Image (cartoon, rainbow, N blue to C red; front, top):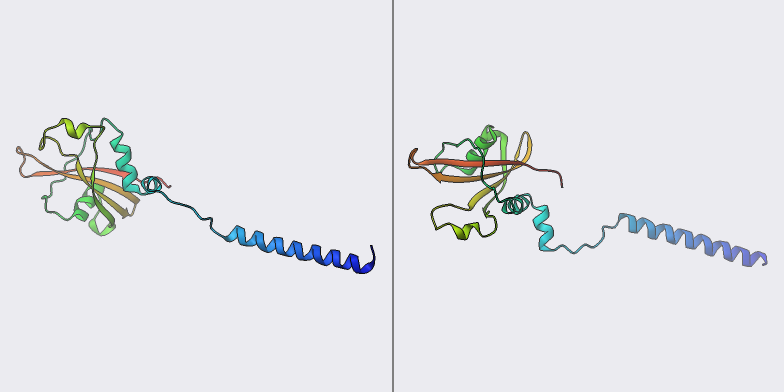
Length: 158
């Protein structure tokens, strides 16, 4: 190999190294193209994740709860802040949605009006982090007009 051939070889090698380095930098800083499907949304959305989890729980909504004595017409932010035991000024409502939670075909087993499977789900940001609060106003003839049932879920990082 003569001097010109060596110079050409080393320049080509240098060009190849620079080119590959540039390609690697581009690949490292480029976000991959990802196809998202509806199942991905269910897993990532905190309200959908809780609805999915509780719909698989045959014992939902059993358990103790402290009734929230506010009228059915009370603002959802006020009811959610009471469920959290915080002042309404310390709670920011990020999302509110009507959801349906029932285990299997449980909603078909009860006649209409006997049991309600519809809840208000509220995603909140509070001084203690983001949480989902499930709410349902329950009529009560012994303590008219009724009170709010609630359950609070701490959000796990996803």
